[in-house]
Length: 114
Image 1: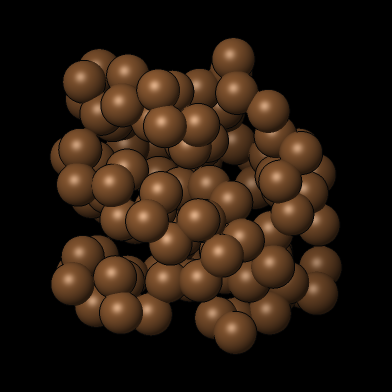
Image 2 (image 1 turned 90 degrees about the horizontal axis):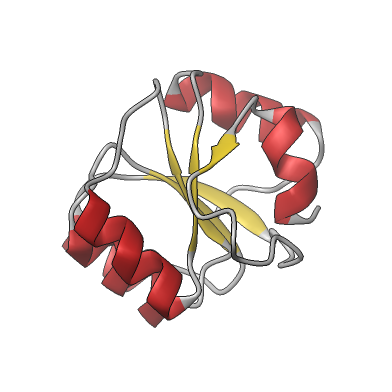
């Protein structure tokens, strides 16, 4: 599944609309502890988190993730979004809970972390 296909699936808004959404989503993951995500992050991962600070972008870029997803309509700080754009990391905002986001991804065949 591409990030562009994930957007309508989870009713998401792309907070970084100038970035390409053609990256392949290879797995999904939910976690808010950055050190844990750093040790478990995978390339192509769609990461669901309530964290919104700049370190989220750094971790996602370091792991070469497909995108970051903010559940429940959570907003990200402007500085973090600017960093996301400069690093090429797509940030999505969904009105759904993290549970519902992952359920929809799983139902479409996106596996949990590889």
